[in-house]
Structures are given as structure tokens and as C-alpha cells.
Figure 1 (cartoon, rainbow, N blue to C red):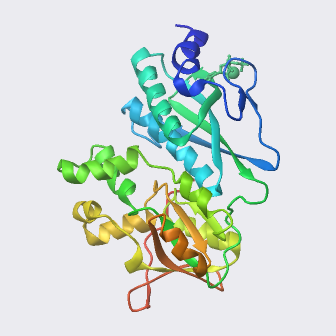
Figure 2 (figure 1 turned 180 degrees about the vertical axis):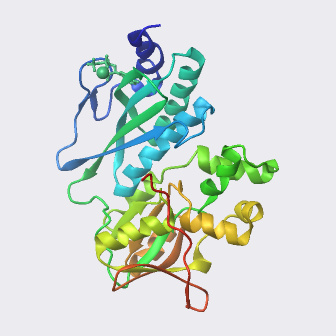
Figure 3 (figure 1 turned 90 degrees about the horizontal axis):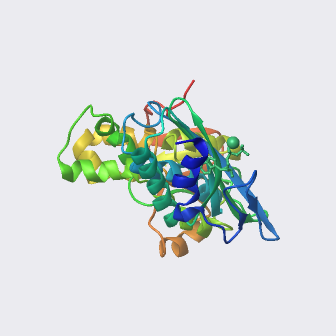
Length: 317
Ligand code: ADP
Ligand code: MG
């Protein structure tokens, strides 16, 4: 099977590859064409996933496809953008039809959930690597950025518990086993993260700053604090950890996963207190701390006393 046959058979014909919406021209020409509505800006983000670094090799290609797109779409959520589409630069060691078909199915499933179209890509031979570039749109000037947090704002995270995906790593890597009732909820957070796209859009004009927690809560809050020129105080007891994670990793281990583990594709954001009630009526939102004057991130216990912080999140170099 040649490169063109592979693209045609597995990618150009997948249901998310059609035109429509802002996609005026999709796969098949030298470029895709996007029509961004007047008064809106294009939000663009790229993420690369390398086999053996960002996911285990071998792994289930369907789950890999879902996860790859969810990880990238989370960056659109963090900006408050509405998804349009994505490109896929795929490097494969060999063309195995079943494997590629399952990857495409996983991408298609997540694309359907996120309202995104596959608009192009590149296909090459080499060590297994996926680079996804996502495109979204946001009303001009309304994107959520990391700048803008002000002293007095609340520090919040969207959705349920933190740290489950990091806690799942020993299971993903086959280093540990656990009964299904513990393993399944943790593995689901690793393989099928749910980008908080609707929450991100709802935060436009309300949150003062936002980002997604992909490198770990403390590390990413550090980025937000630095960009905004403020300090963030995090109350350890308010950091949400799931019962499954506590049972699997222990109290202390669960907290380390939630504070320092990567792969929580959740939004962290700062919010003027007056905005909280209306948002909490529509979304599960945990208030985990406050914005203060100063610099950096610090942790306090239930009595308000500063506590030692675990290691910061993942970095490649
Ligand atoms: P070019 O030589 O112009 O770079 P390619 O031969 O790489 O074009 O790709 C042909 C068409 O198929 C282009 O529209 C490209 O965007 C698309 N394409 C290539 N690989 C993929 C892929 N893995 N997924 C989706 N579209 C792809
Ligand atoms: Mg090409």
C-alpha cells in the first residue's frame, strides 16, 4: 500500500474528514482552507506524541487516537476557543492496515465528541510519532490567556478529581495491577481525557486567566502566576482526589499525583468571586485557592500553615 492509498483509505474517508462549517476545503489539496467568521481570531496549537515517551509502545491504537486528539483539543479549551479542525502528521514504522484503521477510528470518535474535522496532514515512515495541530476560533480579544489573574480572584479547577491519569501510569506501563474497580476509572482518565471545551467557552469574559493542567497542577499554576505577575496560594485540603486514586496510591501518593502528576487535561483558572455562583450552577468547579500579590505558588494546610511542596511536573530537558 502506497502513501496515497493509505491516506485515502484510512484518513480521507473517515467521517470527520468532510468539509462543512469553517472548513471550506479539506484533505486532498496542497492546503486546507478555513473560513474564520469576521470578528473572530484563529486559535492554533501543536502537540507531538512520541512512542515510548508520551504513550507506551505497543498500545491500543484506538485509545491512542482518542487520547492524541483529546490532549490537543484541551489547549483549545484552555483558550476558550470553539474547535474547528485538526491536522495529523503521522510517522509510522510500517503500514499495518488494522492498526492504522483503529487509530483513525479513535481519532474520529474524539473528533465527533469535540466537533472537529480532520483537514489534512502528512504521512511519513520512521519511529512512531503523532503531531496534531488543532485549529479553533474565538471572538477577537476574548481568548482566555495566562495573563490577567488579579489579587482577590479565586483559583479554580474544572471538573472532578485531579491526578487520576498520573496515578494510572504504573497501570499503563504494566508495572502494577489493580482490581477493575480501581483500574478502570484511573485508566479512563489516562486514555480518554475529556477536554473541557464547553467550560472554556463559558469562561470567556468571566475568568481573568486560564490554562490546562497538562504538566501538573503546581507546575502549570506556576506558569499562570508568572504570566500574570501574581502569587497563587493553594489549599492542600481542597485539591480534589478520587476515591479510586486514594485507594490505589494511598493518601500521600494521591496528593502527589494531584499536585505534581501530569496529564490532567482540566482547566485551571482564576475568577473574580462574584462570577463563581452562576458558573457553579452549570459546571462542577472546585475552588482550590486564591490569587495574592507577590510571585510563585505556595501550598497551605487546613490551618493555613505553609507546607513543603512535592517535586514540580514533567519536563523533557
Ligand atoms: P503534499 O505533497 O502536498 O505535502 P501529501 O502527499 O503529503 O501532500 O498529502 C496529500 C493530502 O493528504 C494533503 O491534503 C494532506 O493534507 C493530506 N494528508 C496527508 N497525510 C495525512 C494524514 N495522515 N491525515 C490526514 N490527511 C493527510
Ligand atoms: Mg506532505
